[in-house]
Image 1 (cartoon, helix red, strand yellow):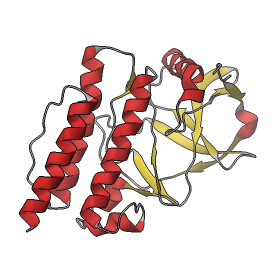
Image 2 (cartoon, helix red, strand yellow):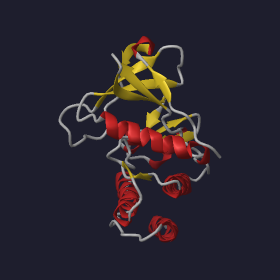
Image 3 (cartoon, rainbow, N blue to C red):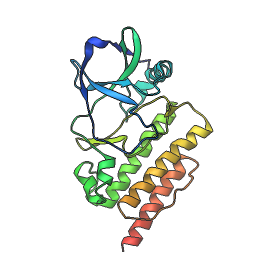
Length: 232
């Protein structure tokens, strides 16, 4: 499949500023981005960089997305850039209204809460592991297309209409292929598994350095079995 062209949006499409619930704290003391409505298109919003924004890195990332967008089925990738006075100041990203983040769900400390937003099985524990299995597929699909997403955390996963969505694509976290970055993808995933099980009080789990996606899938299965043995 061929390349998907980037779309240019200028300040004439900039609507009112949007504000979202706070998620996990970031290392940066100041907000990295501000968000605005995209006039005429409620399915997307404008993401303007306000802290450590690098226009060249952002455009390079978007160009990489344009090369593989048609091959990526499980993730909606940003497809446009935003300029003000002919200067690139941000990107245009998919928007999911009326969502709940995984961060908010984990804050309830109740694994059954996930069923209200994402249900693949009636059993709340198995449902949780199906969620992790689906998102392991998502990360692997990105890796297969040269996009090494290393910011897989509970603030970057949203739920709407019984689907999960991966958000927050910044150049520093969408890395190029390398062994180090491959490892960073799996470590990011493993850390979230650790956090989720701890917040839901299912298992006091240690992080594990899986070498590849196949090994991580085996780990998921073993961890679920261990959770079930503990429950009984």
